[in-house]
Picture 1 (tube, one colour):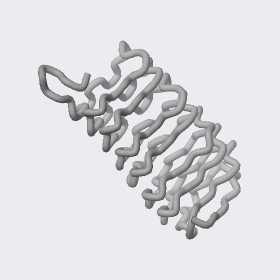
Picture 2: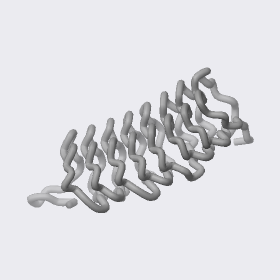
Picture 3: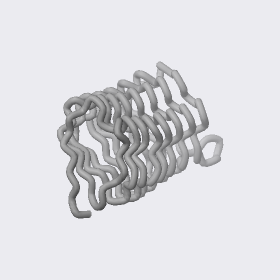
Length: 193
């Protein structure tokens, strides 16, 4: 709810619903919430969908990690600026991802082992670093377009993605760690950005 005891709900606290197997169906975060705490919904294995309200600005470490029932396309709203480390790791039911245009910080392993991701993905221009293991183990991921703001791609960002056929960078070539594409045979391209 957006209001409890007459007070607005603006934050979901750390570990608030962690491991709550009785939570089922589609979870809707109200527009009043601006922050989702660390591991707030980690391990809620029976959630089947997630709708994030337009007021959310940050999603912290492991907030929705290990929620394999989350399915379909995950849409990160435009107000979100930061997605914490491992926020959606092991959400194997997700098939698509849209990152809002205001995202500037993405933590390590944020979408690691989301084995259902198949759609072409785009990283917004405001992101400067592709962190370690961002899409590691996303075995069905097919292609990624990386925004012009990226200057560094860290280790294992796209490791163990055997169906990844292309990673395109807009603008200047960023620094790329030697282990970025381990176990992946993707073609890397650069397009004018």
